[in-house]
Amino acid sequence: MKTDTAHHYWAEEWARAEGVGKWEHPEPEAMAYAETVAPGARVLDLGAGVGRHALALARQGFAVAALDAAPEGIAELTRIAAAEELTIDARVGMMTELPFADASFDHVLSWNVIYHGDETVLRAAIAEIARVLKPGGRFMGTMLSARRVPAELAKAPGREISRNTWVFEGPGDKIHPHYFCTGRDLLELFSAFEVCRLEDREHDTPGSWHWHLVLERL
Image (cartoon, rainbow, N blue to C red; front, side, top):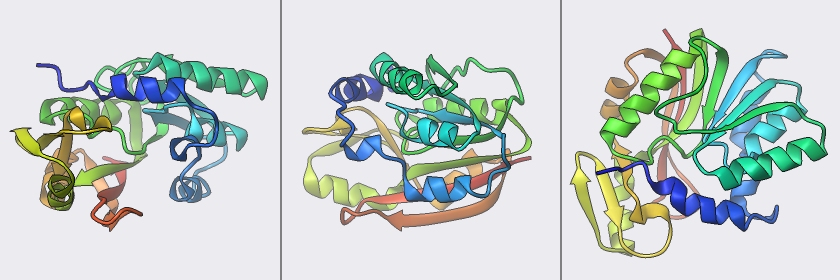
């Protein structure tokens, strides 16, 4: 059974993108992190969508690559980049098979992306992130917290289809498998990394707990 299927939902969202949605504007936290990145660094936006982070990073002069499994997102990103005369290496592909050489990035950014799938998918994505990062390179990303599961169950019926992997009924992308984890799980999953920052934080919606990570490739 394939579990990395959420991009089918997001493909429909990106096809309707009009420049005003929440997912079309960069996260302030990601942009604050970018201020600490060396000028000219090579950065991968993994799960780029319509390019909210890739475009912002390219405007700041970073060497940016972007990958998303939804062609509709990459098409919109490419259109905007061309209109602004920005150079972005934008590709369609899966996070479990990154089409980039070993140790080719200084930083990988993946905001609300790599938890879309079961543990097998997640481990493959993490291994690929580690592979394409240079030693000492950093990963900034988010993961769903196990603390969030009760809040999701309060909104809609759900079931755990495999360890830490849940699907929920109703609208939105959680009809597709999502991985929810504890801090202990994260430390084991990211054992090829040194932890620089790890925080379980509630977002705007009550119960919307996410882990925020900054990790360094060993």
